[in-house]
Amino acid sequence: MNDIISHNRKANIRLLKPKTKFNKKLLLVLPFVIMTLLLFVVPLVMVIVKSFLPTTAGGAELNWSIMNNFVLGKIGLSILLALIATAICTVLAYPFAYMMAFNKSKSFKAVLVVLITAPIWSSMLVKLIGLKTFFDVCAGFSNSTFGHIFTVIGLVYIYIPFMILPIYNVLDDMPKNLVFASQDLGQNMVKTFFKIVVPYSKTAFYAGLTMVFLPAVTTVAIPQFLNNATNNATIGDIIVQEGEEGLISDIALARSSSLSLVVSIIVLALYLVIAFIPKLFKLRHRRVK
Image (cartoon, rainbow, N blue to C red):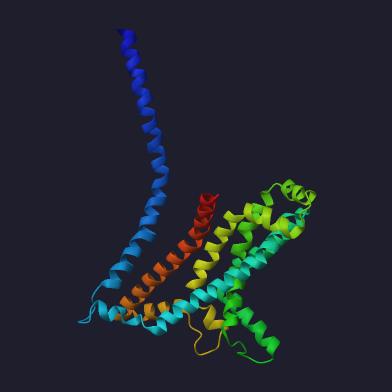
């Protein structure tokens, strides 16, 4: 009888152990869940509510009246500039990260990492003022920057470290024997790069794509500082302008919330398309095989 009771106690202890581990894991995740709810979910719900909250007799019609051709054009322009900047960052980041990862000098790598991360340490406005001053000195007069090309240059200048660092971290840990084996089998550097290096670092590329493209779409201040043209504003500048007016006007606040919601939906849909189209092609290719 005593043996049966002791056996049942041991069985009960075993059943309780997973619950204890689960509770410990839950306690570790709880702070992050609370921060996510307070800093992400609650503000997002407030934006959605403000987007559809009637402010005057016009109600939602008045809130969505901001979605005219001008604003849609600004959304398209912002996405186009962000795509161009992301493509340039990718073209510049991959060779630079490859050169860093395959360099044998640790001191040289440390110096390059410091140079890459140094722009992140200072204020974005200070960097933009310095970049604009550089262009003015080269031109020989003040306010010499006109055109969206300077906005793209500013986006690349600000966000390229966020593309280089993830790729470098992955390539630095990549077994170098893969590259040497590819070259021994007769592949040149270009084919080795696209067949070995790029597929190996695709996860880092997706991370860099997220950290460059998404902030670049809704960027603020870069067009205002670097593009002196009259049509320099992007959708981020319009949202900020409406948000500042929203401190004294419910209509402007509703417009700002509506624009934020619409831009978020468009950017999310575009990101999902970019992320899932390659997977669909791979799935179709497998089915064809």
